[in-house]
View (cartoon, rainbow, N blue to C red):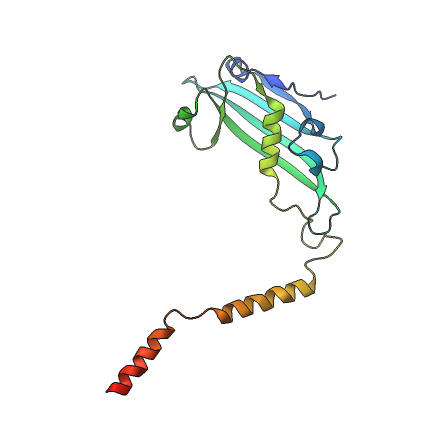
Length: 183
């Protein structure tokens, strides 16, 4: 049986000892995701591997899998969103250390003597992985695709807008005809 990850850990200590953690974080412990999640009793599966390289730079590699049930913004019915994220964090004491790290590392700023919340870290990564607009895949929405009336209105608005746009060089046409009349 997989157990819950501890909330508070010392990332520096885990990295120096090269430890790995595997467990889950309950959605009920993710207040920022809040009421958006319809399956609040489920959890995210998390694997974290901590280590330090030859130069003494400590890092953590995180892998999160979660099946979230959210409301489709098109039909308001439940839709399952499968998230599978992998992130590499560089442990830093201060933000000014960011330049030492390659771009593929995300900064994780925490002092060596402090603890950090893994649950908050997992929640933030899930929030970043969510689609901007949650909806069923194309063709799978029970309500269907964009209603034809709305699609027709959008086309009409586009045509009207393109017709209303004036050519910025149209005024030059008047100058050309004036020159011909004067000669």
